[in-house]
Length: 593
Image (cartoon, rainbow, N blue to C red; front, top):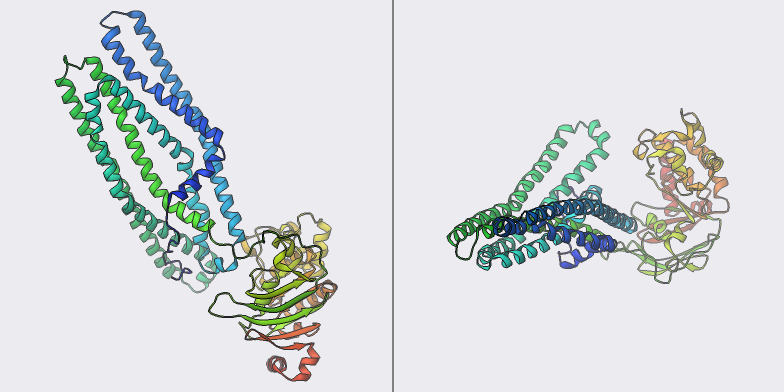
């Protein structure tokens, strides 16, 4: 199934099981002591709260007929204490469980975000980013009430129900049995509704995901939308997605609310039966005090049942969120550290590919048995047609993907044997489409080297000719950057990201069409600065504008997953092969312009 469209529901790749609930509970059991204290407090509160009807029974049947004033005063004081104790317990329950629940949410979102940072590029290429965002924000937030109150309330209500039944049995067995008749009916309805309700909320979460994906995509592409006057068409799409969500929300809530009237109707019938049986039995085995106390208990009897039914509903609803959250957390990390991985020592920059074969999936091989070596300090240019495998080579050097066969060595060390962080820390990567983060220009340049001084930041900017335009800004290096640098030109963003990459002082520098967004005049200045910075560093350069790579130590022409030609510019021109044809065609094109 295609997963990269906003209007296609995502298939759920894992099914819900009790294992999911156990994993969810682990986020609470981290605070086991606080959780157990809260449960104990609430069980105490539940027991104390149930003393009220029994005290009233004792007052009506014993103390008042016996004119025991001291006994009545004592019962009144005890009754007042039960109210005070209950309120104190509720206060501490709210305080503790708010702390536990929100910290559980914090830890879950942290685990999700940490895992998202480990997932391969394919994961982000295969689905709208809005569908990922909704899992990290909306779905996790959807579990907030369950973790803060739902689980504790459910356990408390269960104990409350047990205590009520014990009190009722102690007072009158016949009336208690009458009350219990309705419970099997409620349990049957709960099980009948379970699968229907779960599927309805799964569909609802899909519709929310679709709506979020389209909203995210529309905001990111608002400039294009306005340029092509697509507002009306986009509004039509948004309305359809919004209407789908509304319809499924109404349907899901209707199913959810079926439980409440079932409980209410059964409770009314049972309460009426207790009244009839109780009144008919007065002066036999039921006293006025017993009937009054029992009426008090039966009112409370249905409250925890209704709450438990509601809690059951909430768990069923939360399943749709839990499934998606853990599906994401369980997404396989394709590239990760080996169990015995070690820190890569400071490298010189010798790179070697030994019989490397690579494919993104089994259907198509991208690189087929490639071998080459690069010495420390050399600059290597990769040229060739689109889809030939140039970007794959540079992605493999940083180990963004793992190869199927062969070895990639840096200074003779297999990159699979070292930690990813220690490998990537010694590399600088500049992509064709630079990403600028919100914050200041200074913070963007310092992104990979938080400890570097302002002087080092300025020096890096000067080297790549970014300093000239930065100093002309009102706030200079403290200028606030909008999301993805929308206030800057493509060339200016490229220069800022160049300074960021070079400040990291990488031993291996990778430039993937890094000068494509820079005008010819700026590029000439940039090349001047880069020549100094490339000295002593191994560099890999992908550029379709061949004039920018003429001075490279080695040029490799890549096509159909193979290195077709290799040599410096003059050697390849003299050879008059594929590189010569490509260079000549560009030369003629520029000459014609």
